[in-house]
Length: 478
Image (tube, rainbow, N blue to C red):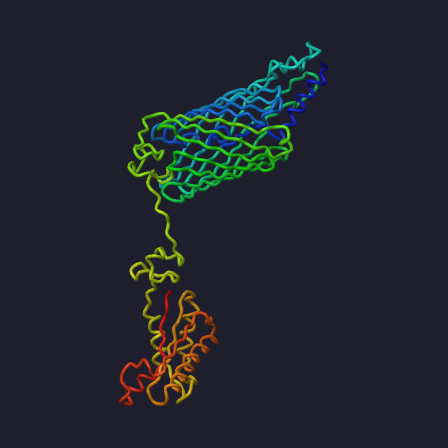
């Protein structure tokens, strides 16, 4: 086969930079050390991981990736280290090598940690010689079979809290290149920077299940962007299933389990949805993790007893192995659950069972408005002397947007029952209408009227009848 054939192979493989140069995995977090060295030492115990992935089964020369890693913390100090080996085969092109890992971890307390990581290694890029070439003395072919050793470094940062986590990394920061020709052909193969970022949240559903949605994004020169969205459901941090979607590429389903205190196994399947869907039955990935050290786990929640704040009660790892106390509904956001709050729609104080406590000034505002409220004789017209006190009450109601006001009209027993009901009603509504004109919303003023039926005292004296002729106002906290 002529020289142009092998050059076309190399050029074709070079074009894969714009599609997939750095290996892909179904389960990003399982293989995260390959992408982000900031996660080195993120597990409390030394961890070893192995994964194998066959992509696009049914297509000759489709990618196959093998990955193995080990990492651990150094005692209680801030440093963690490890390494990994990688073998990635794409068509005739092979990439094999190893990297060392180092991270500096900062602990901010309450489960918040920040990891700054670096990986450095070397990789051999070569053709495996499975083709039939007519020109065996071709210098390009000879150089490609011998391969090239390329240095590489990756940088990464990882931040973790019990509720959320995120990371950003730059694999292949050197942009090393391999030129297999001595005839002026350059940049035949280059390790392009692959910016990779991810973010996720931990959402405890109850004491058993935790949902973990996550997004992963990758950007590779010249202008290729990939996005994965996934949702992982864990049971007792021991069994899990995960569904994910890679934009314009594949839909995936994975499942895994800790078969004992130290070993985890998992499997993932990708259903191709791109233009290759007609030529492949999908992609397969198998994963194995082993946790070193003595990990007794009495409650079976996947958190070692030595790291479990509640070793006899199952709970998620992000809650230190303790059961999750689900936050109860709190509509008014006053820190008191609605089922314990006497005023669930109005923010209040714990010592008052969730209801507001009036200040002296607030109490005087409503007291003075009631005490000084007068009407023209036998009418529903409010006296001018009463209006300044109602104005101040209106200002308070506008300021306290969660409060409501109940206005109740009453009369003495003089006159007919029908007349007294009508008068108590019209006077109560006169107060409501005045406050509304001052800016208090209609739906925050409740009106009642009772005529002569709810006296404060008997109506046998003028003093008693005067006390019974009234419009009461009280704040209502719902």
